[in-house]
Amino acid sequence: MRQMWRWMAGVAVAGVLFSLPVHAQRRMGGPGFGPRWGAGPAMAAQGQPAAPAALKEYLGLTDQQMQQLLDLRRQTAEDNRGVVEQIRLKRQELATLMQTANPDPAKAGQLLVDIRKLEEQRRARLDEFRTKALGLLTAEQKQKLTELEKALTLGPAARQAVGLGLIAPPRQGAGMMGGAGPLAPMRGARLRALRRAQRRA
Image (cartoon, rainbow, N blue to C red; front, side, top):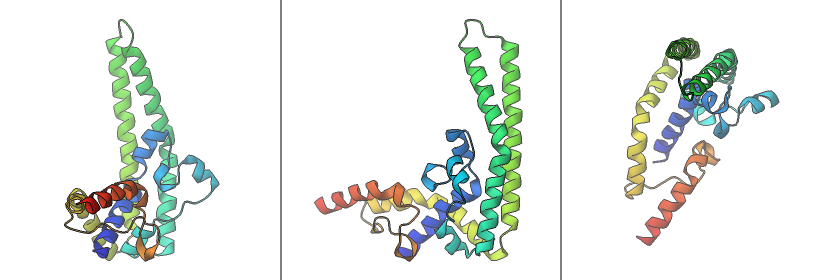
């Protein structure tokens, strides 16, 4: 059971690292790990974020590999910052245009074309990042990463099994090596509610 939860912890962190900060960019307008992982623009200015321990242990990443991945991720986010800002401004301009009494169809169409081209540019950089990131891994590490990708589909089933009492939930905040795990912020309140329900049952 403990091994399964370690596996799921690796899945969560792998998704954050290898997908790059796409959602964080959309929420925050800039690069970073996002609020839950502690490395948005402000954190980046203060120093290097902590390495994802669960993923590092599961894949068997060396300190050098982890640093290379984090540096590559940060650099790609910085490279995309200008594009993300342009997309935001174009969308804002389009929204303002559509709120007018008689929006210009030609201008609206051009804005949509511009946004699509910028999105393609951003995605191309993200694809380039992933190719470079995977190139830093060994064949064995790539195989483990493939297993993590497959495991993403097991999350809902595992949570439902916990809800039905078929499997025991992990200790709150318990991660690998007995410390606070990367899933702790996401599951604390939910697990407390599940435990209360199980005690009442």
